[in-house]
Length: 116
Picture 1 (cartoon, rainbow, N blue to C red):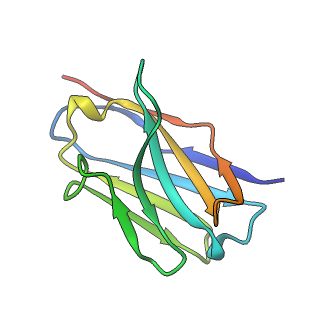
Picture 2: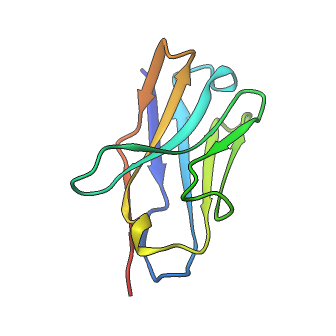
Picture 3: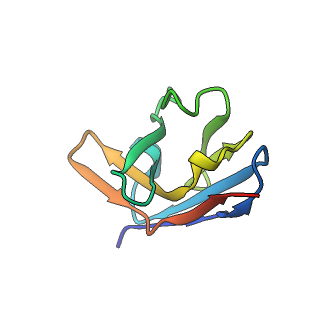
């Protein structure tokens, strides 16, 4: 079955960095658009960043210039490097695999808390 397993979340001070990882299995990873989404308490889930099979990237305006998404197809991994973290980045971060909006899969999420 399809599994997306996130790791790397935690507590970090404002201005700090974290690197999230997502390990995918059960899919032909290289053909999927991979993405990171987040959901803060009381808010809707929102897009953070995506990376296509052709390595084209897209970022939410609030994270552009601070976050970097990347993928390693041979390892079926997608990463989110988060720098200059702010308290408003606090959320549960979810890994997503999307194939033309026909097949979509989600991970279980990893908590990121930015606080002093």
